Amino acid sequence: MKWFREARFGLFIHWGLYSQAAGEWDGKPSPGAGEWIMNDRQIPPTQYAKLVPQFNPVKFDAREWVRIAKDAGMKYICITTKHHDGFALYPSALTDWCIKSTPFQRDPLKELAGACQEAGITLCFYHSIMDWHHPEYAPRKSWFDGSNNTPDFEKYVAFLKGELKELLTGYGPIGIVWFDGNWESTWNFDRGADLYKYILSLQPNTIVNNRVGRDRKGVAGTTDGQERIGDYGTPEQSIPASGYGPGVDWETCMTMNGTWGYKKSDQNWKPTQTLVRNLIDCASKGGNYLLNVGPTGEGLIPDASIERLKEIGQWMQVNGEAIYGSTASPFSRQLPWGRCTKKTTTAGTTLYLHVFDWPNNGELLLPGLNNKTAKAWLLADAKKKSLSAELTEDGLLLKLPETAPDAISSTVVVQIKGALRVEPVMTTQRRDGSITLPAFEARLHGKTLRYEQGGPLDDIGYWTDPADWAEWEFKVRTPGKFEVTALIAAPATGSFDLSIGGTTLRCASPVTASYFDFKPVTLGVIEIPAASTSTLAVRPVSDAWQPMNLKSIKLKLITSSP
Ligand code: FHN
Image 1 (cartoon, rainbow, N blue to C red):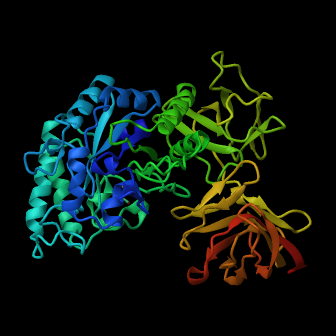
Image 2: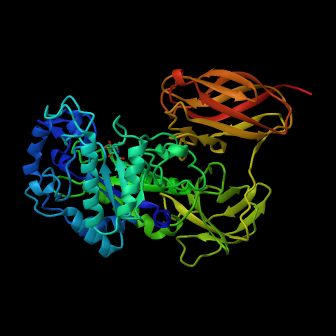
Image 3: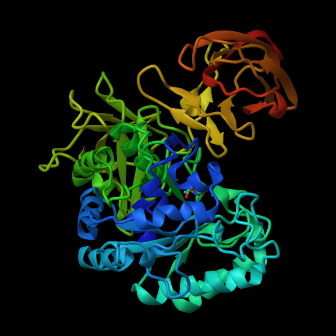
C-alpha cells in the first residue's frame, strides 16, 4: 500500500459504450447516471448494441489524457475496463461484446498503459462483477433478452476470471483492480475471497479494493471483521466524518458533476475550490481522493473537467508537498479554520495547516499543541520567512500575514521539534456556569456527517444518514440543571435524542427557510451530574429523522447542585 498512501490523488475514468449514448436514448434524457442508461431505460442488449457501430472515438489521445491527469497532480489513473453493461474496452479474445466490434480498431487500454508508463503514472483497472450483457450472468433482469432463463453463474465467473487474466497479463503492472457491482445476490464472501486470491496469483503486487467482497457495509463499504476482503475501503460521493482511524486505508471516489459516465445534459459542475478542499479533507483524514471524468463517445474529456483539473494542478504545484505521502491530522476535533495533514520522520513532525478561512486578526490557534516549534512558514513562500509562533495555555498560536496566499486554501508549514504533543482540548464550563458547544468542537461519527466551514457555514452538515451522530466532551465545574438551546437550520422538522450521562431529551428540530437559515431553538432542561468531565451526544431518531445543520448547542445553568 506504500505507493497508494504516497499518491493520495487519482483520476477515475468512466468510459465505454454508454459514453456514446451521452445520457440520452431515443432522444430522451435518461434519469440516472450516464453509465446506467441500459438499466434506467431498460434497453435490451440487442437494442443497446446499436451503439457498437457508432462508437468510434477517433479523438481519443491517451498521452493527452495522461498529461491532463499528471498536470493536475494525480499519481494514478483508474479506467473502466468493463462497466455493468458488460462491454469490454479492449479487444478481448473471449467475447465479441468488446471494442474490436466497433469501427475503432485500436486498443485504448494498451495506448493508455503505454502513456502511463512513459509519464510514471500508475495504471489501475475498474472492473464490474455485475454484467447486464453476458448470457450466463445472474440474476437475470426482466429487460434482458430472453436468451437464457437458466443461467449458469459458474460459467459467468469463469468468463469473468478469463477477462481479468487478459487484463492482468496483457497491459503491464496494474496498480489497483477496482471491483464494483458486487451487491447482487449471486455474489458472496467466498467468491470474493477466491477472486481476490486469483488477482494476486496473476499480479502479486496489485492492490484490490473492498468491492471484491460481497457487500459494502461497515468501514467505507468494507464488510467489517473477518468478513472483510480487499485492501482498502471505498466511500463513494462522500468523505467520512472523521476517517477510519490509523491503519485503515480508504479512498473516496467522487464525480465532478452528477454522473460518472458522460451525460451531455449534466452541466452541474462542482467548483474547483470544492474539489481541492475535498482532496485536502480526504488527506487530513488519512484517505485518498479518486476524482472522476466521463469522456465523450469521441474520446474527449469534457472541457469543464479539463478546466477544473488545470486549476487543481495550479494549486497542487504550490501545495502538493502537503498532500503526497501525508497522514491524518493529529487533532481529535475539527479545526475551525480548515484542515491539517502531517508527515512524521525520525527527525520530528511537520504539520501542514490548510487554512480555508484566513483569520482576520492574523492569529491561528493549533488547539492543544504543546510543542516548541522549530520553525513555521508559508509553503508558498520560497524564502520560508519565519512566522511568529507562541506557546499558550490553549495551544500554539501563530501570527499570519494579512493576505492569504491562496483563496482556495493556503498552507502553513509548522516544523515540530521532538515528539509531537497534542493535548486533547476540551470545552470548559464558563464562570457563569454556561457551556457552549460549537460545531467544530464536536467529534463526528458516521459516513457523510461533516463539519462545514466558511462564510455562513461553521456547522455540522451533510447529516443525511440517521446512523451518523455527534458528541462533545467538556469539563464540568458546576453540575446542576441546565436549559438546553441550539442553533439549527433545517427545511423540515425531525426528531433527535440529546443525551448527557443517562439522561436523554427527545428533541425536535425547527423548520427554517433553508439549510443556511439558523434559528435558536429551546430543547428542554437536562441534568449534568457531578463529574470532572461529561459528554453530550446528539443522535437522530432513525424513523423520524430529517437532515438538519447544527451550528452550536448552549447549556445555561438554571440550578446548581451541590
Ligand atoms: O453503479 C456504479 C456506478 O455506475 C459507478 O461506477 C460507481 C463508481 O464508484 N460505482 C457504482 C455505484 O456504487
